[in-house]
Image (cartoon, rainbow, N blue to C red; front, top):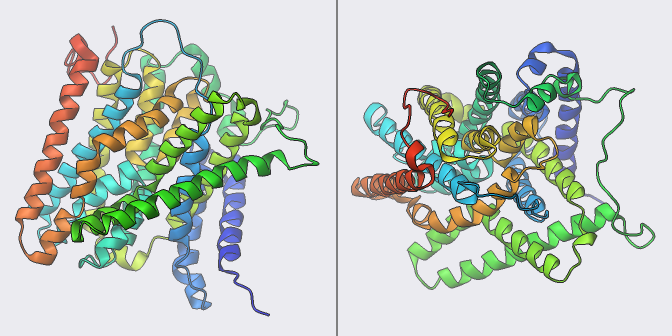
Length: 468
């Protein structure tokens, strides 16, 4: 009897790479100094394995992209099912609206930069190439892979691999750029003394907890194990929500089919951003749980562990799924666009965050920087340096902002295939329509920012970080 081993092989290889990466982080000072996540190291270990070793052994490697896609959605669901932190007293400017504005700023500025750089300096490339900057950086590997895969049928050879490559470079910007901002914050006094002590903790730098130190609690049991294991119960809750998300998108896809070609294209794009649907449904599920007063059945720490597992395996798998064959064809524009984009993000995110928020400014900046260069995973990884247990409202505000961002971003989503359509039809007016859409979003972001930042909007413009 034959069984399918593809999933187990992928899972085993990622697990082995994560174990090796954990050992490297605990021993090598370079990885400790730059707080490089073990999942990122594991991904680069897997890159030659999936590109050279496994193909030579006759093992197919096409399933990693699917795993990345699903794990991204699972991570969003598990974080969105957590309870909201208690409301803080006093008026706090920004919050959910500020996080949404920061996310949309990444979409607009990165899309404009990528598209215009390709048009001006690399005109022979596929017109949609530049959109991989926001897809890979601001949206992440799941979206870059899904939408890039769709562009392959519209003439973009290797679109999925190029998207994953941008996502990988985004992770590098998140790590090294994030550590640069953290160290600069320490030197310039942007960080509180309590956070400073935490950042100097040797266990955090090594990535492992000393044997003579008390171990933190990973979670609490909410069920009797004789009936069902508590971890199984929480996994069941997460995957039940994911199933509902799948059925909802199936229904939407069916209905959009009656609209015609445009409806089918929109449906394809919606599957690429399933993480937003999943997050909204999970938030609604949490509201029902709280309404019927059964919140004691759901443990936030356990959900955080599920999210952490998903994120670690997703990041490692995303890097392993990159095809170096296609990357070699486009290496120059990929490097140039990602470097310019990374520099822009490293300047704009701290500049706006320090003026737009008046609570947890540095933490919110790190979260936005992480999600503007990687995904929720890198945002949480940087936030975890300052807020290890996610006790602040930063992570919950981000989750809530995902729903608001989705509603505002619908025109952007509807337009995502316009540059690819320009290639198929030979009519560049579709490309310029996408430029106009991105410019409109930039105007919205600037207006929303001014409303939130008020008098601080353009105060001390020469300073990267605004301080009263």
